[in-house]
Image 1 (cartoon, helix red, strand yellow):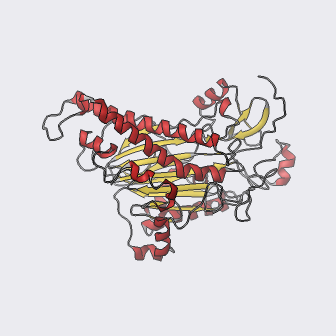
Image 2 (cartoon, rainbow, N blue to C red; image 1 turned 90 degrees about the vertical axis):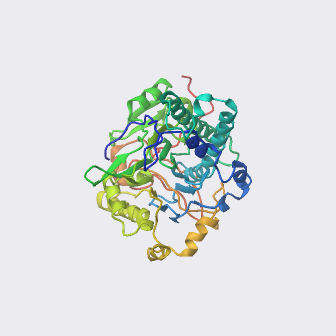
Length: 470
C-alpha cells in the first residue's frame, strides 16, 4: 500500500513559490478578514445546498479537480464525495470522500457529505470571531517589516494549527451528535468513514476517520513521481486503536478464515464485526471504543507537489499508492483521471478477486497548480457541458431520506463462495439488508450475500430485552 507518514502537524505556512512563514495576512486570508463572502452568505443557502456555486458531488469536474464514483456489486452505491471550491474564501478548496456501511450507510455518507463542510465552516467562523476579539498581540506582526521576530512568528504558526485542529475536532463531534439524534436516519448499525481536506494556498489541513485514504503525488529530487501517504487507515489492527477499544470493553479479533482482518465486536454478542476503529454513526459500538474523533494533520505544500487523491477503500484494496499516482499522472486528460483510476480499480478487482463482489469505488483528484483541461477535452472524455453545469447548479440533488439517489459507496471483502461459507462454519451472515432491505430506486444493498471479500460488518446485533451485564 506504500509508505505511511506521521500525522503530526507541520507548522510553517510557506507559499508555494517563496517559502514565507505565517503572517497576520496569512491568518486573515484563512479566517475571514480578506474573504470576498461571509459565512452568513452560506447560511442563507442552507435550504438550497445543491445550488451553492462551485460545489460538485456527482461524477464530473471543477476548475481544479475531477471526481468519479462507480457502484460495486453489492447493490446501492454507499459512497459519497464532494469538492467545494471558494469554500470559505478565494483559493480555498474543501474535498471529501465518505464510505458508508450498514443498512443505511448510503444515507449516512450523504448526510455527512452535505453537513460536515458547513459545520467546519461554522466553527472556523466562530474561531475567527474569538481570535479577532482576543487582542492576542503576538499575532499582530507587521507583514511589511523586514525583520520578523521568530518568537512572534512561531506564535502565529501555533495559533493557526490550533484553530484548524479545534475546528476539525468540533465539527466531527457535532456531526456525530446530529446523526445520533436524527429523527429519520437510523445509525445504530450504520455509519461512514470520512477523509476531508481543506487546501488554502500552500497549506493543507486534513481530518479523517475510518479507512478512506488521501495520498499526495509529488516529484522527488530526480523529477520522478512518487506517492506520499497523507493519512493513516484507522483500523482495529493498529495497536493504539485496539487498546482503546479493549479498555472500553469492546472486543477485537479476526475470524479464522480471514486472519488479516481485525474487527470490533460487542462484549456480549458476536456482532457486528466492524472492520474499522473510527466512524460516524455505528452507535451500537460507541460505548465500546469506536469513536468519531478525527486524526488531524497540517502539511505545507511545495512546487514539487502535483496532485492529491482521496479515495474509498474499494480503490486501496486493489491498488497501491504508487500505482494510483502512476495512473493519475499518466491520464490522457486531467478531467478523466478520476474515472480512469476507478476503471483501473474495477479491472484489478476482476483480475485479483474473480469470484468476489467488487466494492464501490469513489475518487477525488485535486490538481495543485489549479489547471484543468479545456471544455472540449472534457467532452471528449464522455462528459458533456450539460453534465458540468448540472454539477455546479445542483440540478442533480437528493434528500436525506434517499428519495433521489446518486452514486455513493460501501467497503472491503475475502474471496469465498457461499458453499465455502458453510464449510468454514463462521458466524452466520445475516447482515445489512437481510432482515431489512434498503430500497432506493428499486435497488437493495446486498452487502454480504454470496461471494464477498472483507465486508465492513459481519452481522447485525440482536438485542434481547435484557442484555447481559458487564
